[in-house]
Length: 390
Image (cartoon, rainbow, N blue to C red):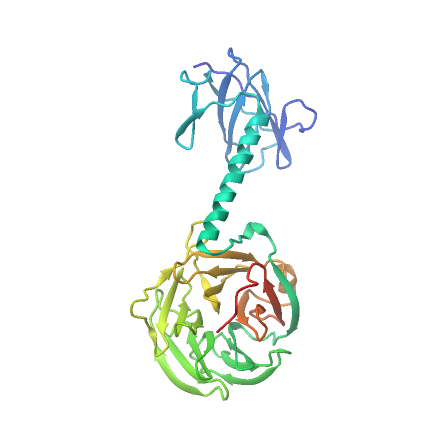
């Protein structure tokens, strides 16, 4: 192996064709001198972070591309490289652990074409998988994939924890100790029709409409739930419950299976029989929900049931997830940052997005948040054929 000099110059700018590449507001240049006209150059550079560069060079000067963890210091200069003579003797290179023909060095057009073909192949494979599994994937990278149709007033003192629709009325469960309430709202105007205070020892959480004009509500840390008459808001009965964290966050109802689906701030969904709320349903173990990035969907909060799928918002994220409750797969992840941008709502005293419910109109959802002065009516792209229930 021979050693050569790599000159990193952060003072100049790219664009003049002199071998400069920008990183943030700064730039760098790689200049290599070797004895071979075909070689592979590997450089690991650390300046206020880590810059990883893998480059192929065919002559004395090469423009490298890097991913910077931090901006290069404008006065920094580092000299370090290790140059390996020529390609492997067998003419093969490695890619994803497999031997493949080495690319023509210096021919970026072919490399880009191969990369584009590989990317298109992966996309096509993903589409086939989605079709086989019966859904179309939507990710946060897709940007705004919902339509804001209308909005109505909402009591901005409501620390919304649960939102649900049934029998021509919109119902709301609010939180905070000493301020938790169960309410009926006008589904057209958002006006409060009836409001009942909870005992001050309870922090109200999720609530859903179900069955014969009933509401079921869970509380945060007391492991206590309540059943209400939806007309009078009188407590009909109460029950104890356990979950992964022994907390209550969100609850919805699958009327086809007569099952309550419950979140507790973890990445798990629990399933309770309608006739025995608070106890995991026999033959229906809890399911862990996984995000599209492969990580557990922690802090699942308010829930709604829509045509066999669970729609969940995530605490402190402007995100709605569409989850297959049987598998825990996040089929769709909707970015809601543009619904009411954080900067605007903070100025108005609004907190996090929390509260999603079906409406009397097919495919239309109510969405609101804690201390929001408005409730939105929205429609999710890609859900046009799905019927709302619960």
